[in-house]
Length: 251
Image (tube, rainbow, N blue to C red):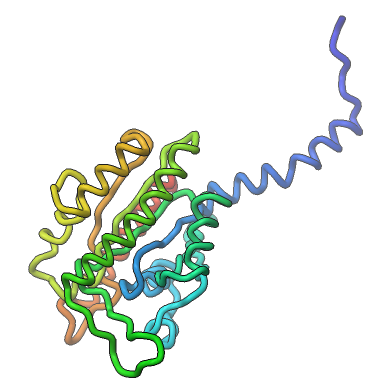
């Protein structure tokens, strides 16, 4: 028997019912969601502000944020990104944010921020003055933080029907301008470093073809007194933004 032809009213109702889903899918393609992760003190919020062309609030830059920060970058042709900055402190809000971006509403990509042992130490609660930590201690804390995040990325990647991308953003390069290549190698897959080994493990868990990894240098601020010029810092942020656009299919 021939299939019944839907009545015009039924077609209209079906179109109206599916319209929000189609609009949501289009918006997600034009404004993919990017998780910005990393331990406290590496400059996640400041980098997200630079990417979204927004000024960083002085208080947030000094002490960081205990809640998830949201930023939007609007570019040409109605395209851009929505950034979710996950708190770096090991608190309930951080664990909840990690669950949100990797499980509840999985993101489209990840920018994991590291600082090659140059993160700003946070002072102990209830004390005054700047925090104190050795570079070795900061590198160890960074690796521990990455281990927690990597497990969640692997879990997300195996559930997805499309590849997941990860950019390791090596920030604060103004503090080691003559050793940037060495820092990038430290965070690269196959490097034999502790961080590189964890990246290799992540790719093995997620499937190498399902997870792309880039390692890029970044400096959120440059200029007088810094190890890089303001123009060089801008160029690094622009290069990161371009790579995100390439990974998201915007260019």
